[in-house]
Image (cartoon, rainbow over the protein chains, first blue to last red):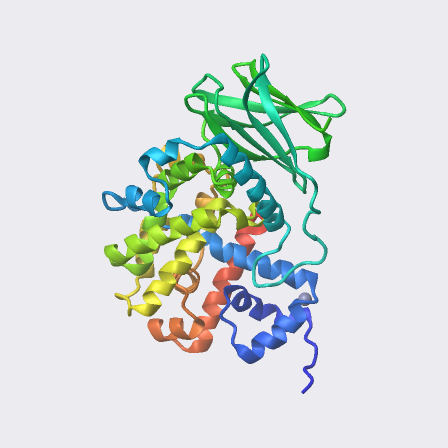
Length: 221
Length: 186
Ligand SMILES: [Zn+2]
């Protein structure tokens, strides 16, 4: 049984139901067969679905019952003491593993199983890692993951401060950019940022507090 | 900006950063529980749903794609989906979209820690919802928040199926136009 190809005008009224996932069998097939080949309608369905989800942003707040947070953290496997101890060596392995997963996830299109043209996942590129040092002491690690955008992962253990620190990078041309800020407690913390520049162009990264460099790392040598 | 963004917290959680998870839970627990509560009604099952949602966020933080929308919407959509599953299993206390609308969409003060979401578009969305005729607003909330099909909405509101469809469609199209190009997309 051949289905007459529909055009944009024919399916326009049914896009909201498609976006909400409530369009029924027969019509769904017809509408989908058009939408899957039409960039304009894919875009419209995406926007309708985003608008529908956006309503959730005005959901009312409510105070959860006492003990809620403790139970959630326990169920996450994060109970009091363990939460504060993360062995640095284990951490970098976990960072390396997660970076691969993250790069993969960022390359895929979600939503209704429709994928717009183009946009393959980032190619697997050898990760770049380096120690963060100051006065020859190793204070933490930096790890770069290529992709669009690339990511910078940073973990520190002996920074000697508690407070907000800034991470900057210098690129091959000598330009510096601020990547982000993160919270360090008792000298330790770890964070991930999207890079404002391609990972392959980063030559150095450093951590600053109040304008003073606390530690730096040389990359891509 | 003294607080990490939601997106930075999720990126941290994606690499197993436990501190990020703690900050995230503290920042989101009231919103997640509030949404669960407004959909399932019963406090006990709302608590289960909210816990499940936050645990799921922690386990699946790697699949969050910031190009496809805000962290807040991602987390709340996970919560909504779990809440809808919960009410499908157990026949719900009567759904009341008015509760969601009056508590949520009129004036809701956010704690400073919850306002860290720089992409908070709640005021804009409230405005757009307020601009809809009340019957469209109800139908739209029933469909998007409570997961009702057009036929469920028609039964619940005592209106013909065609009318339910028209209300949902018109409501969503108007909202989408009101949010316009600002709906974050790749
Ligand atoms: Zn089309």
